[in-house]
Length: 298
Image 1 (cartoon, rainbow, N blue to C red):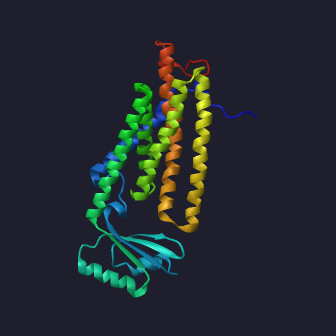
Image 2 (spheres, helix red, strand yellow):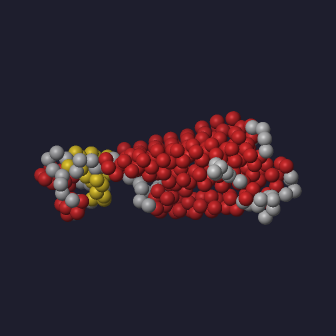
Image 3 (cartoon, rainbow, N blue to C red):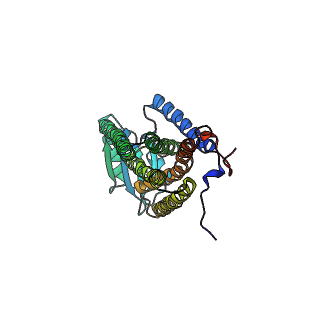
């Protein structure tokens, strides 16, 4: 049985581009609406919004904890390792009220850990994370443009990275993951994964000899193995987090799983579709954008 092949001529390149483009437009609208209404494209976690984190080790259930802290602004109860729980509270501006809550915690859970993240510090981290993502994109774009010196090749790589981050961030927010240091790190990693697979495709097409369809197929074979290997490794990491209940690793692995699946779509549908139209237009300027189907026709 032969290897799974990628036949670019089976599909109209405009149809290949349509789905990623539509998802990107929806994600931009969604993230834009969030930004206008809340000030951030994705709901901020405690790292960026500030708050109180309490770690307790107990045989009590999550429901018991919610009942015990019902008089305080408890936002979430997450499980940790060794019968531990990670409780997140909104900030309590009143110092006396905060001290009262501290006593309430230690009265029943003397070994508890309490971490206070001030709103100002959270805003500072938020700003630093924003600049980290922005600088990553800018530097990535500069390197890509210098390496290829071709506007279309460089644009598709950068656009695919933007698509990956935007669509992943939207899905992340919809399913309830907040923007934290862990998820921000995962989004930065996705920029690298996106550039990696898209540079592979673009390099094969622009800098290797041979028929264009064969170069597409060879690039897909290598790129698909690369991405699926990473997907399997990240999936194992995600499963392991349910055993150890390590929240930050769970968040990173979950965002990477989403992003890598999106990257397969943006690379082999959007980027490949744009480049197919580009090369088809070079070979036949009159019909370049209309090629599709096995015989090059719709």
